[in-house]
Image (cartoon, rainbow, N blue to C red; front, side, top):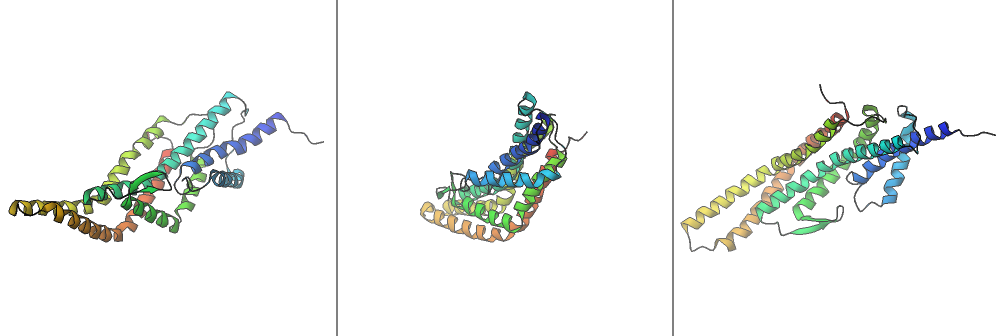
Amino acid sequence: MFEWTEEQIGAWVGMHLWPLFRISSFMMTTPILGTQIVPARVRLALSLLMTILIVPSLPPVPEVDPLSVNSVAIIIQQVLIGLAMGFAVLLLFQLFVVTGQIVAMNMGLGFASMVDPTNGITVTALSQFYLMLVTLLFLSMGGHLVMFEAVVESFRFLPISAQEVDVWSWWYLASRISWMFASALMIALPAVTALLIVNISFGVMTRAAPQMNIFSIGFPMTVLFGLVVFWISIGGILPQFTVLSENTFDFMQVMLQPPPP
């Protein structure tokens, strides 16, 4: 009769359980799959399927007792790595949400808010339009496949082990937030500049003709001109999104590698 030894059971559990924690935490955080419209059971099923498929190609895992303290430390480490990778991709999508917020506030459409069903928060209508647009672009360009490939490659750059992740990687991830705001401002800068010129022209008109009711004229004109500028700027969103997507996946690869000397 075939019997399983304690070492064999521990090796089998570690071979499948630890990659599952990294992949499932990534699935819970990443955009599209990690949103509220995708049930948790679906995400867990995809994580299990992906784990079963990639386990044979993974590097050897350390032989650690699944019920020991070292095993708990490895589990926490894998969860943090998965969350960090999902957070890096999430910043790519939130970048365009911030862009929509900046443009909407400058053109006077900040009050036109709607509930985002994917994240459960209230955003402006322009932010929701940007979010839907970049989601379709991401899927049409095969970004979800590249995202899954990045998760699989993370086991090669940062294999499962009891060693702690270098602090440099976490600081590198925290600095990514400033990149999100800077990139959002660069995308919104043409529209913001055009709207600033419109506001300056209305200010000159107010000084030239004080009896003119600038509020009844300026607000609809600012909204109308802002929509025209927004419509023109949409034409250049594809190359910008391509560059930002490549930058995001390169960032994920560098984040998982050892720090530079």
